[in-house]
Image (cartoon, rainbow, N blue to C red; front, side):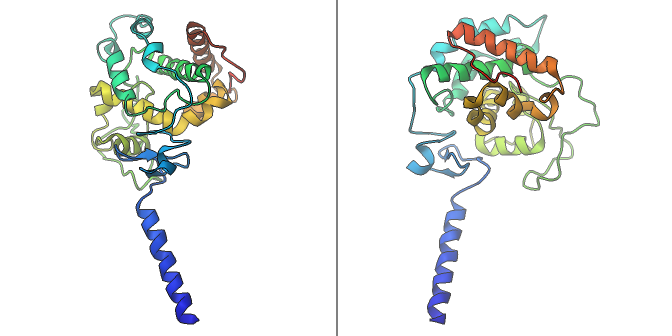
Length: 268
């Protein structure tokens, strides 16, 4: 019996090892893999089916066509709100957004058609706020001593010559986000974080990656939950009311344009 127990134990260890080798708990999946609802990577139905967050997911729950909602007029309407000669006006394009969207076909696909439109409104409300109406590619006025390196994430070691401040449509920040996004999108996020400010396609991919990994699951809880998922520690619970209101106003504006109700729980 002792020998049998030992054999069973070894078999269990082997099975666990095989499973561990095929999943990653940070949702930094390869291009051909799906990120499951539990943040693991794989290519079978349990990863690409119900609850799939990103990658070549196989299920959809509504018929919303994102390109039909994010029209040229809508996108340019955001750009036209920007004041002066902004670097983003010659960088951010609708074509780059739609190209990046091909890697995240579950964006705006959860729930009803109105739910999908609300998610698009929420995404672009945050993008508009974070970038000053697609004006800014990089965070402004960052102290030269600030590199946004958190050593508590040894899987994403900082390059001492690089800085991980906000870049892109959702202002990707911190080494662990650059590292994880780089793995998922297949660019050197830790070694070349500036790529997010130099390549519009990758820039939008980082925004959609962050959204689908950290925000998408909060959409059904109301717009306020998406604010908390993006910048809660700095803005929510009365910490920066003006920024929260800015995000809400853009969301309400876009919901009106899309013909959907903004719903409840707008603030955080």
